[in-house]
Every structure is written in structure tokens, then in C-alpha cells.
Image (cartoon, rainbow over all chains, first blue to last red; front, side, top):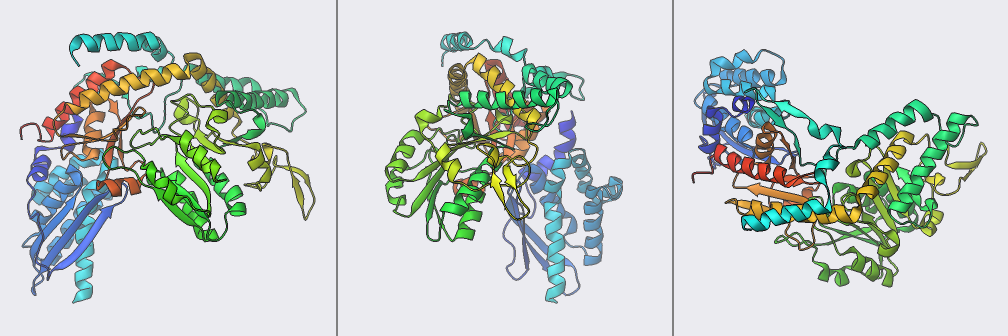
Amino acid sequence: MELDELYQDIILDHYKHPHNFGEGDSSGVVVESENPVCGDHIKLVVLIDENDIVQEVKFTGSGCAISMASASMMTEEIKGKPLSEVKKIINDVLDSMRGDRSADALDEHGDLAALKGVMKFPVRVKCATLAWHAIKDALEKNKKKT
Amino acid sequence: MPDQIIESEIMSAQTIINVKKIREDFPILSERFTSSDGKGKSLIYFDNAATTQKPQAVLDALLNYYRHQNANVHRAIHRLGERATAAYEESRQKVARFINSPSTREIVFTRGTTEAINLVAHSWGRKFINRGDEIVLTEMEHHSNLIPWQLLAKEREAVLRFIPFSKANGTLQIGNLDHLITEKTRLIALTHMSNVFGTINPVRGIIQKAHDHGIAVLLDGAQAVPHLPTDVQELDCDFLAFSGHKMCGPTGIGVLYAKEKFLEDMDPYQGGGEMISSVWLDKATWNELPHKFEAGTPNIAGAIGLGAAMDYLRAVGMDKITLYEQKLTTYALERMQKIPEMKIFGMAPFRGAVISFYLGQIHPHDMAQYLDSEGIAVRAGHHCAQPVMRKLGIPATTRASFYFYNTYEEVDRFIEILKKAREFFGYGTR
């Protein structure tokens, strides 16, 4: 059934048991992002150390299974990685979702491959990208801060 | 309800309306979807508050217009022009009859409810609303009966006040009205029936009270006119706005009803052809009512289609439509409330066939997606009523809305799928 491609087990698992959910260290970079059309809302707190490594990333918010699972997967994927690598992952996700490149780019990023199913449901793409736009904003904000 | 009572309920509902026969009039209702497991799924259309489906009679009227009547109205000397004009104006008569307006001079064709309200805000509001004047709305308005007044209030430095609604059952807290009305109140604009809660507001009493204070009243009839018998003389509203596409008519056509004395006093909405009488290079005089408010070539086919829709609804009977929908809605509400963790927004004693809900923690987008995979079309979102959602403290709801062609069997299937969705998203076992 098509629906199973959208709500893959990995996605439902992240939705029901989100990773890195909660308030983060208040000294981190804080960004909020929302999708006014459906009211999905996410708040990220990102802690980047002096070696440009993502020490910690936490999220809170509310939204559909796709947006919350995508946020959970995002935090899991970028935590502990250097900024250069994180930027590449962000671009891979956003470019694939936009259709600018083959979604196969997601295969090398573990659980993120599950997001490929979303692309068959164009109206849900913005749900999946909410957290990724938020982390992109967070990195921009961090750049300005330093 | 015990099974026997349900059976007799369904039987009695079927004596009100022969739904099976009615469904044959709507070609789209026999659409089927094939899912990837190869099973065909029939369409269950529960998004009627957004737009309704069209009977064959309306499709025929549109085709007939383009095949046999197409010409511009009110200008041509030729025979086609006469036919088009006659058909267009006949539709205006049908509209007047449908809402019991005494004169076609009070029926202005617009693009829809939104344009009708904007027309009043522009042509009446800018002329009669002055600095410090007050406009009373309700907290449950669709954006289309909120934003035009926000724009007007900003421009004229007027003040907006709001009749609150109860979070418990989605009814207006009408006791507040006495405090909200002041000597500066010029207009009360409110919805006859909420597109989120389904609440049918006690507009008759509000209108009487407003008129006691010399205040004009605009009714947003987008949800009410398609589902309830409407008599503007009995209601005594000064303005009534509604859309064709929510009552079996085409999109892009709607109606502003306004009392003649209001239309006479108002300035034109848009300038152009048709709305003028005599034009000089530096000045013009206006055409008579209602043409003064219909600049440019109108949506002729749309108006004719709307006339056909009204013929169709009259033949079914608006009182029967109301009664059948009330029964179907009561049945659906009763069954939905038995599902654990079901929260329904809007439990007014007088309500129409609009049901907004939230099941457990399942986000409305996920719910709507799941229902769609089973062929059930509902709406998920804020329903163009963001202030309502904010007050309820939720981002969105899922909304099922019925029309007289929906059946008890469809409601049963809907309930079954709601239960499946609850299991799918992990709330069945908790």
C-alpha cells in the first residue's frame, strides 16, 4: 500500500519514540520554525563546540508524524558530526526533497533514506523539511554569533 | 444506540430523502480509486464544507450555455445575446426566489462569499464607517469575514470587537453582546453557521437586537445557505453573502444580497463596463441596481449553473436537506464519541453537518492522509480560522462535513477507518 511508503516503520518509530526530544542547553543556538499552513512548530537548541562539532542538538515542538520523525532523524544524524559534514547532509536532504537531485543521495545517511517515501506525496514535503530548514537557520545564526 | 433503533433511524432518514436515487444525479460520486494492492476503493466525499459536488443538471446547464447561448450579456442586439441575457437574468430571479428576496434589484452576482463581503467593506464600509466607529464580529469567523474588516478598520481608524465563543461547545457567548454594543457600533458581521464547529448561530435574535440600536447586520451565509432554508425577509439581515460552489453550483460565482436602500446608498465597488449609465471623459453616472455593482463581463456560465443548482436543491427540498443532514450528523457524532480519545470541537445544540475533531495525538495531516488512502476525503488544517485554532490551543483539526448525498453506510465506513487509523499510529494499544 502506498501509505506504507510514506509511513515507513522507521518513521513511525521515530515519531512514537523521538530521539533528542526536550529542552536543550540554554547556552546553545536557539531557532524556531513553523509551517503556518498546518501549524507545525519546532524549536531547536544546538550546541556547537570550539572545534565546530555539533555537541548537542535537542528539539521540542508539535506536528504531524512526518515532521516530528524527520526532526528526530535529523538530530540523530548530525549529532557529533563536524559542521562541514552537517552542511552536506542538510543540502542532500533539501536538494532531494526539492527534486533538484536524485533522492538516492539519502541512501548514504542511514535512517534518512526513509524520507524518500515522502516525495511521492508532494503536499507532505514541507512537513519533512521543516526541521531541516530550522537546522540550516541555526547554522547561519551560529556563524553570525562567532 | 441499540441496533434496532439505528435501523429504524436509517429507515426514517431514507423516507426523508431517497439518497440512493439522489446519488445517481452526481456522476463524480461513482469515482473509484485503485490502491496499489489492487483493491478498488469507492470515493467517500466528506469535504462538503470546502466545496460540494455537482449534479448532472448543473453540468448540463454549463454545457448548454456554451453550446447554445454563449454571448455577452446586456449588450448584444443579436439573438444569442438575448438568450444569454435572458438566462443570466433568469438565474438572478432564481436566486431571489431561493432566499425569498422581494426583488432582483437586491441580488448582486460576485465571485463568491469572499468578494461579496469585500464589496460591502469597500462600498458601504468606506462610506459609512468613520474614525472611532465600531464593528462587532465573532471570534469564530472565517478569515473572509475577518480580514476585510481588519483592512477597513485600519483605513478608517475604526475598532473591531468580538463576541467570544465557548471553548467547551463552540457556541457564541451571546450574553456579552449587550456589553459589546455601544452608540458607536455601526455593523455586526457574523457567520450564520460556523465552518469549524458547525454551530448554527442565533442570528435572528442578534439581528433584532442590532436593529433596535440602528445597527446594520451582515450574515456570512457560506455554510448556512447550502444547508438551511433561507428567508432574508424573515431573517431581516441587511446583507447576506454566500457562494455557489458550496451548494452544488460552479466555482467562481457567488451572491451578495443586500436591502435595496443599502445598495442605493453605496458607491460602486469596481469601475468598468456594465456598471455605468452615461460616461464622459471626466465623469460618469451609475447603472441601476444591481448592475451598478457588476463591472465587466460577469461569470455568465457560473450564474446560469448556480440557477440550475438552486432548481435542483428546491426540487429536493431545503427543509428535507436540513432534516436529513441533522439525522446523519447526530448519528455520526454519536458513533464518533464512542471511539476512545476522540475529541470533537463543537457540540452546539443547534448545529449543521460539520464535524471538527482530533483523535488522540494523531495530527490532522496524518489522519487526513490515512483516510485518503481509504478513499475518504476530509479536510485537515486551520479551516481559514487561525484565531479559532489559537483559542482552542491546537494547530489544526480534521474536519468531516456532509451533504444530503452522503449516507449512513459512508459514516459507518468512516468510523471503521478512524479506528484503524488509531491503531496504525500507535494509540490502539495504549
